[in-house]
Length: 363
Image (tube, rainbow, N blue to C red):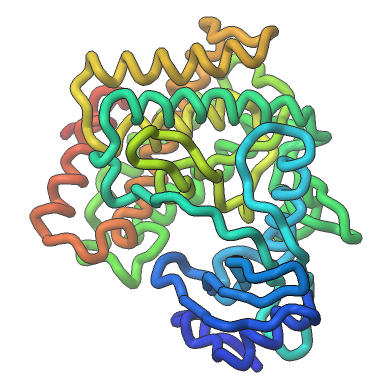
């Protein structure tokens, strides 16, 4: 049986039951609720177990966006993080790295109650939102303490163990700056031709005129950055869409999507998360500064040897710039269902950001 990578929800009920049986043969599936979100197959299941009924999540890699050696890391990272930190993650009930009949890897995990506020972070009141941001700082501090890792690269599984991959598709690097420049040369190439999802782009040349000036700037700025800190685990997609929260209190119930972690310096992860968490409701500058201080102080308190010193802030400024390039390259996907006027508005925001930071770019 093969899954349709375009429509992961087409995994049959029979296949779902077979996947559960492959991991937990003593469990019986009583109901299946497929998630309409994401690119891979995710379903919440009610199951009958010898210990009683429970609700669980089945996730299977059905799209081509994450390579299997990387996807296999997610349940193992849940286990590592759940064992070594206080970061809230679902309990794992088992996983399968490869299977002849079903899309794999796949795993079973605890179902955690909570709201995904990717499309509506405004539901959080001021105190609740600050709680989410402070929790992010503490969670990342604990995650980064699990390092250092031996090299820069993609976290995945080799010989059944978590590692920084070193393959043709996922080569390691010794210098984070070299890897960063190489990655964003590729991003700029994509921006010149419609972004990461050119088939969805209504205007493939929307940002093409910016590419030469940004490329010249990054070729100067990235090699000149101060020495990065040693690499550690980076959950670079820590955003509202990958959190389950209590919308009333702001308590983070679970941090999700550990299937695509990187080994990189901590400041890179911090810049990414600030970009994700401080932007969605478009606060005024004063409120943004307050939330940024809450995030950074929570992080610093849990890492006694850490300082947001001048060198760190210099690196983070460049990392925020490349984060913006990712958002520009993802615009056709993120705003696929938006109106042309809304896409134009987001594009104008991106251009204004670059115009303030890159010589030769006009808004």
